[in-house]
Length: 478
Image (cartoon, rainbow, N blue to C red; front, side, top):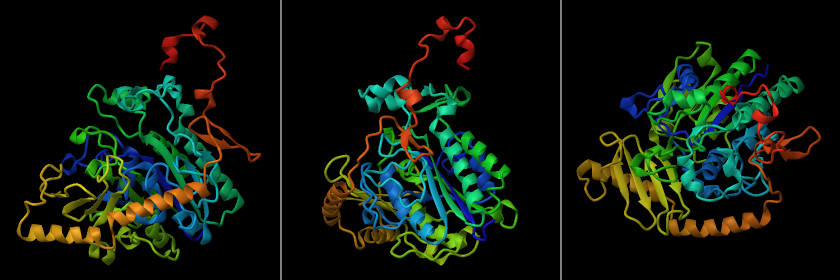
């Protein structure tokens, strides 16, 4: 067993902070059933007020990997390319003695697909970002794709054994076993990146019928529980830090909106849990960090927890002492955490930069009226305080506004965005054209399609009830 702790990072996609059964309705929780994550909270530190750096898949992941604000690491949109000159926590830990691997969705642009990880046996290598179309008939139908995201919610047509989540768990387990066999004394970092609960909003019948017709779609956590049970049985968690987080949230109808890429709480705020071996063996009591934190804090925090020297030029802070239940001055000295979206996706001037303090949220727009909310008195963000606040509240909001603009200029950042994107796309243009959502690396070093049985199938029988005398459609729909 290595002296330094291993790190297992479970990353999901589009899991809003509300959907944890450990979160009470009084704290904004929604009815759902997440026993695996509840168990990690009971044996870990719940960072209960965590925000992504940009509420969209690719830029959030790049910012988290780099430990920087989105505009300081080229995290602009879903086609962004991760600049190889910027270290990630994977490259940094790898340079400091860790074996590193990522499995599953990364959603990275261009020909740079490893994000500093040494190994990547399975995932979305430049294709349609790992999300398996469901219902299956839609894979070759590009019409009305946005409306389908909600209209097609229901029971999945993808066999469970072929789900991306199952492959991530199996490939992750295989890599960990091989790594332990090859270098039992070397610490490892594994990022297991799952596609759900990101749309398609489909699930196995037992999940769907637990909630329908009430209309609540649960995060899919059973696979995480199965995965952790296998690793625990194999002894792979004995000296392992477990991290759970999601890249961004999901509005799910709040404010009349769906999906993400807005400043609202449901889009920007995500679950985040860190469970240390000392939590799970009883040496440390479970704890909660309620002060606002950022996914950008995970890079320096993993350094602190693993005894790795801090990388330079990070925007996140090291929360390792707070996770151990000890004082963390930097956490309380920080005015707030930053979320930004700096591509004009919703029209010119809609770019925004947000700061969340323990009480307030201030949203500055490039060319729209600013917004501010008192999240203690107004957690549903219904009453804009800009132009209405007085006294100490007005002073506190002005402090946050100053913090938002400290060293930041919307026009300069837009010029940077255009130049940086063009340069990286020219230098690291995508050179492969995957035809299905996910690919897998064979033992002979060839990368092949992993989802062909779903989307490019060699059909054996289009009507099993006709071709097999003992086939029952009713029994096989279970």
